[in-house]
Length: 103
Image (cartoon, rainbow, N blue to C red; front, top):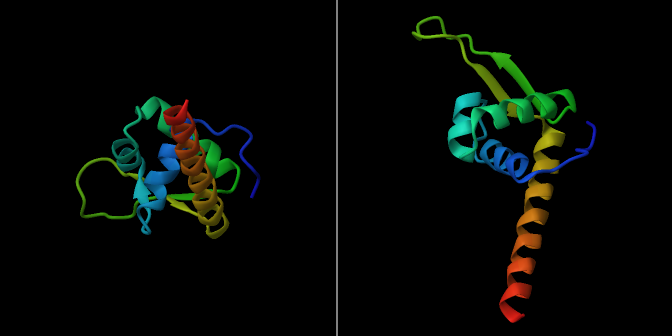
């Protein structure tokens, strides 16, 4: 697994959405839970997969109507790294808010 060179608020939101669900989730659910547009989320998912943070597969549910969905799941290492990264980001945000409140 490779480290993230760039961590944006949208990346953190996508990681939070993936961490919230232990089962594989489809891309549009990540879009919905992150509150970010699909045009931001799908490139993030592709980058995370390329770096080894995520695994994906096509849904194999023949009885379901509609187009097949791509399912995403954090790898074991990706889940650990995502939890650490989002935790650090939340701590930094709390620190910044506390600093602003005392200024």
